[in-house]
Length: 307
Image (tube, rainbow, N blue to C red; front, side):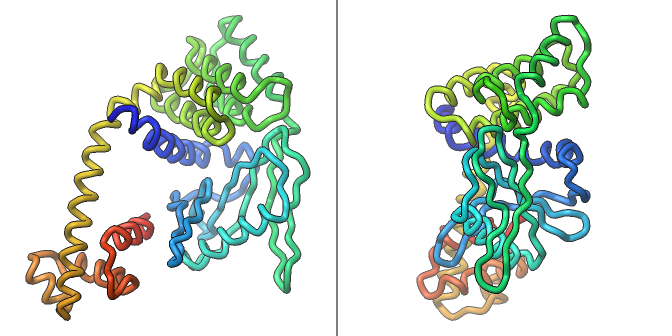
């Protein structure tokens, strides 16, 4: 059970934590204007059951949706078509304008930022990290650790961008070094802040590393405060979420059976002793899947609309 959770739930938990910390701390550092109102779901499911998963999606205070992608290879026309598809569908779902920023890592090739196709050109805003040198950034902080100097939150935040910068060191080595600095005695961070910063580093590891390199990062982080937090609540949360999902799908199944018999939402609510708004929400979603009424698909559709 623990092994299954580590592979399926750990990345999702870390990415969500990373996204929130990224928004709260790093948007000003990247000179991205605007105040975040909340984080939105990043999995947009088409009626054709084609899943489009963005890296990060924020709703800003002014109503704009800000979409972030991380790229470590050349950004080409195919990427722009993909980003445009994400934005078009996201804008249709939320009825909001979307701006896309692409965070480019140090070893990226050519950057295509505009797609001229038809009457409406499409443009992304690339944020290129290669101007920064990860090795210099890490050396400066390691020197401070050796001297016993206290490291403030402001000094440690740029650590999160070192996997995206240029430099001779590998991304794996940068993440390991950054983790060591975060967990040094000189780090002046609260436990929660340290968890959030480690989750950002883990998210980048999941994004850019594979096989043995990723497994090594997982092993190291499992011994940090991030690993402690995840393993302590992971199993119980997984069981709780499983129970809630099962109850929801069972209710959807009962509602759909009543719909097949021609009953109205009000009649169904009375028969099942459920609140009418809950039944109406299920009935509205179920209409998209008539006449077969796949309960699992309806549940997934309803979850995708939750914020």
